[in-house]
Length: 418
Image (cartoon, rainbow, N blue to C red; front, top):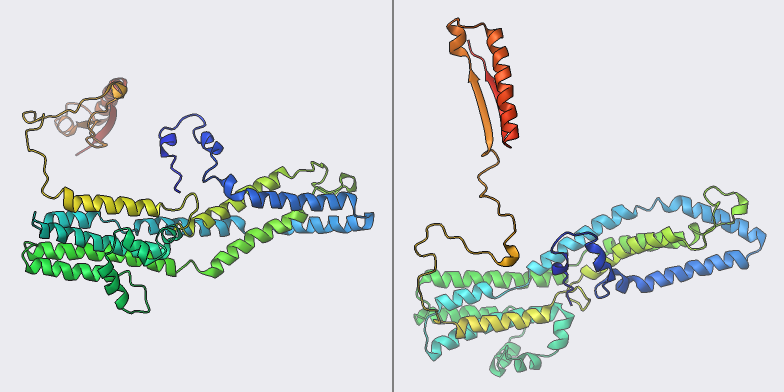
């Protein structure tokens, strides 16, 4: 689903973004070409009707209507309306992604907090982790069409290994008119309490940390549910859509090329194809398509979230972390810089000629301050103030030139006392 092109723009180069214009998957061409062809077809139909099927009186009336539409089309604040709307959509889109529950913190807490290398300890860790994964699956199944197609019934959830048949019976016996994605989280807390009472969780601080991580996990599940339930106000979406569609409906008439022989201002050239109007449609309608693509990122568009991939990844790594990796540590040994107080990792041949800058010390570190105090000389009567300052200016200028030549900044400060 997600179209990734980060590696193709890793470095800024000549026409770097131009190569991306040839991509099709996830491109503006793919999502807009039908509307673009429909707009151009309607424009062409009106143009042919005006040129070949209208009599002279009808042409004059159409020309006045076209000029009227063109004059007032600019009153629709397209950039203002679309700019705010798309900004709101993009912020909401990224916030939804950061609200997807990830098991990484819970699995690390479980692996380090629930003790026991025997079968009971292993069963506790795997069951606790599976409950968290089940809760995430249930909420993603509720908001993502791609996940729902993969797990359309609870039978599919059981067959996938997220839930046992006994757990399914218990789950279905709990009647509630609301979404029950939170039930596995309650099972998690109850089982964690049992583990604490049995001494599998070594102390109350670890038990508290485990519940805090679960609550954070459950909070993200809840946030996804509310993002799905609370949409951007419909009136806002309608206003933006009507603004774009009405603007280009007006352009179908207002941007027609009129008879140059009539002498209308701005209509002294007949190009037949409205190039700039088509570009304007491409940009504004494409802007609206961006919002349409991102308003619900849990669908099946090219740039929607990879929810099924996330389910696979999260389930696999979390089970590995709490089971296979439990207590499995590599042998500790001295690292290669054991006796080196200034370790310097080597560079490969590909990075050998990369300019290595010295350590940054602060923006004022290389500043050269030249201060002159003339208090003693003037008080002793050795020289007049004016003569001394004149000589010092010459000296300071010479020092300034030297410092500039050697590539250092020089700031000259005079201190006058007395």
